[in-house]
Image (tube, rainbow, N blue to C red):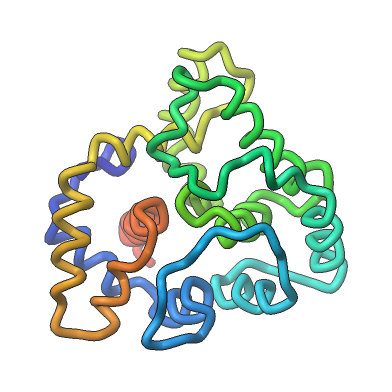
Length: 216
């Protein structure tokens, strides 16, 4: 599997998924429900979602919660299809689609001042097949590749989502193998990981890889 400029095998990816924080998966991804059900896209931000985001480890305060609701109320959700998967969001194939996705992200991150991690967490809960989750270390990890891709498109900003998208496309066979192995896991929690979207699986693996390299 390709993770940025790193290479790991399916066994290593399986292990990284299993040592990730189980509480984050249980409360952020599965909303405290176990046995869980797979996430479904939606257009409605709720107060419960902010509890889920806190469980992920994203900082929140009352002002940010209010800003989040204001952003969600005025967001152009219909501009980005609920069924859209990141692997299919090729900017060369549909620039207008990329523009709509970028606009939705910009709306939350910049226009309403939520910052990257909170904006991404909110959007991931709304579009779990599309939106990657980045932390500051993961932004740093992908920054060189995202900058290289930006030069391909003459973009003024690094293209982080496209960095993840290209990894997903490259890893198609490995992700299928990994999901099948998770689904057959002896442990109920391991089997539940098979319900996560491929972009969520990838970001967990990447985050764990970065944390391991940093000695965390």
